[in-house]
Length: 356
Ligand code: GYE
Image (cartoon, rainbow, N blue to C red; front, side, top):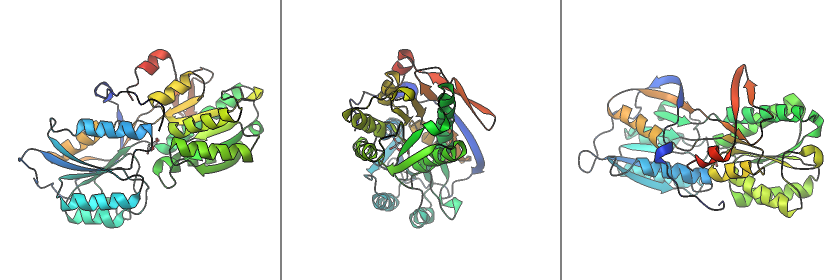
């Protein structure tokens, strides 16, 4: 895992706006019965993907910092070490323990029908957070909150198109490799799709794609192999910050210079997440564009639980608003289907405000 993990003060950064969409939903598991220890405490079972990235660590911290005893919760936390079978076991344990709510950050989209049906039969509402699930019956979960991963990919590639044009590069000058996230995870699917569609539309040379599992070590390994196979590569599209750190190490070790000056032989690194470490590399020019993915879901999930607790309805799906960060201002905004998205100029001041 990356570099120095910085001490996290989440409290100040907990409020990020949410763009709700989709229909309203009622708790599919029925009213959570008051299986609390003292009649007041709400027990929440949280099945977390793992600890593969700085983003994930910030997400875990946000959840643990929200569902505290002081806030009236008993959090049962399970780290699945990136394995779906561990998540399924954790959910079954939560059901057995008769928790009031189950929160699932699913490693991949598919394979959840059976266990979510078991939770529904036990009348325990399930809230999905971060990545999505693909289920045959949408009533198997109560609500989802997370990012629009396809839009993230579209924003990043639209920026690349505009940036290349502004620098006088032709479409055929770009030779791109994709270090993908965990295959089958929504974050991978959306970001890969965004790139593939843009490559097709713009006639870019998309040389190869391979999973770096969202980790620094695998990102480095995949990059080392890409460098050997594709000596002409000049854009590395990393599907998260930790992969970008690994890719930068591999490129540097191979004698390449990372940066935005493709015309003069530099290799451009693009990334997603915008963790403090990622934005530090963006400010120093190692990452040219970092597209934000916000991990601070604790308070958002709490809001959902609060609404359900008081018998209210919640949005079935809610997307989080996110930015893009670049140290240079060549492309100040991108436009997708008529909607403008600003590219925030990254300064030391902006970086110092990042809490994770
Ligand atoms: O981008 C990556 C993490 O699902 C959005 O998972 C999340 C992704 C995030 O490992 O760093």
